[in-house]
Image (cartoon, rainbow, N blue to C red; front, top):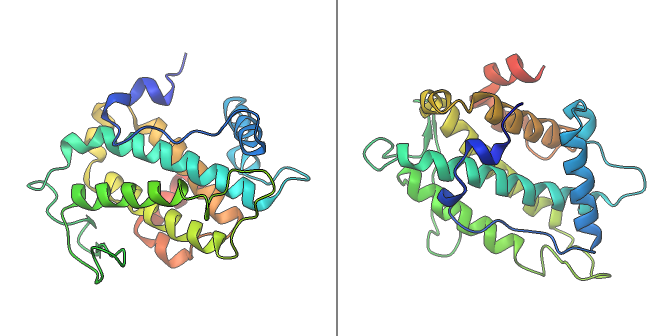
Length: 216
C-alpha cells in the first residue's frame, strides 16, 4: 500500500499549524470533494477542473490553502538539510535567484538565505489566508476584487519552494523515499495553475525540463 504524504513527511517539522476549513461551510465541502477526487486515483488534470455550479474563487481559495499546507509540510521536513551554510541564497541553481520583498520589513528586494526566505514566505502566506478581508469565511461575504491577483502572487512564490527543493535538495528527497510524493504534489499544483492561468509561463522556466518530463 502506498504511503500517504503525512507518513513520508514529519508533521512535527512543519513551520506552523495547518490551516483548516470550518466544518459545515461551503469551502469545507469543496475541500472534501477535492480530497476525495485526489484519493480516487482520477487523472489529476480532471481533478483540478472546476466542479459544475461551483464558484471559481471558492475553488481557488480551497486549493491555495491546500497547497500552502502541503508545501509547508514538504519544506518543513526538508529544512534540516537547508541551512545558512548549505543555502546562503534563495536560489534555483546558478541561473535563478529569488529576493524577498514584502513592502513592510523588506521594502526592497533583499538577498536572504533560503531558510530565512522560506520562513518569511510562509508567515506572509499565513497572514493572507487568515485575513478575512482577503479569504472571507463568513457566508455571504464576497471575495475582494483583487482576490485572484493575490492568489497568483501566493502561488508564484510557492513555486519557488519547488524550484529550490528540486534543484538543491532532490538527493535528500530521494533518500527519504519521497520522490513520488513530491512529484504528485507538484503535478497537482502544476495542473491547477495551468488550468486557471494563475502563473505566467515564464516563471515556470526553472523547472521546465522536469515539468515536460513528468507532467506532459
